Amino acid sequence: MNLRFLRPTAMLALAIGLSACGGSNTFTINVSFKDVLYDGLILVDTISGTELKVAPGTTTATFPNSLDYGKEYNVIIKDTNGVKSLPAHQTCVLGGGADTAGRLSKIQVVVECKIVSPTVTGAIKPTGVATGLQITNGTRPVFTAVAASTAYAFQFVDYGSSFGPVITAQPAGLTCTFVPPANNSVKMGPNNLSYTGTMGDVDVVVDINCVP
Image (cartoon, rainbow, N blue to C red; front, side, top):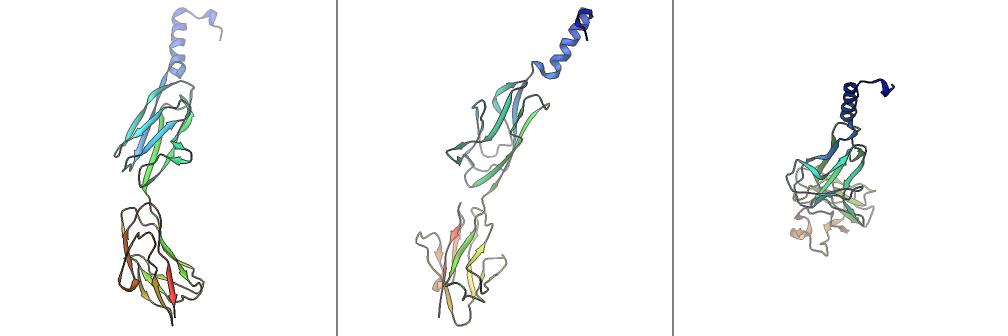
């Protein structure tokens, strides 16, 4: 198209149309959140360096800065020397964090968080002798040892949840008991046949020792 032959009104309309396509628009970085329950979550746009601190219960927020049309952004969970700024007792995943302003009509980043769910576990010693050993933990499926069993495990125990493994059946000719951990992280039951505790942020490890 040759602009020399356009009337002034047509040229004005064309300029407005080009502006509407995004030539001079600015964009905000919008973020939606799911299940942010604790303090500690910080997002950062690594290109501008702008940070966004997220309070518990937040469902939507916007970065304080705006982006011109065509500017790139890269929003991540802030990482300092390999340590992410996550909410306490939670893990989070982030989607839609990197793109170019104006490619879509709206910048929308999504962050979903969940409570950490460590494992209650421990080694069975000596190995290969605990066939028939059974351990219960509330309503979870019973753990039954086989000849190849070297450890027991109850996975996905949410932070703050109670746990209480109990040895309910012994291997033939052996007596197996839980070994009190050195860090006193659990409360031992009578004869060390059980223990109880409340799940923290990391795996609970209580070994089992079997003797004739």
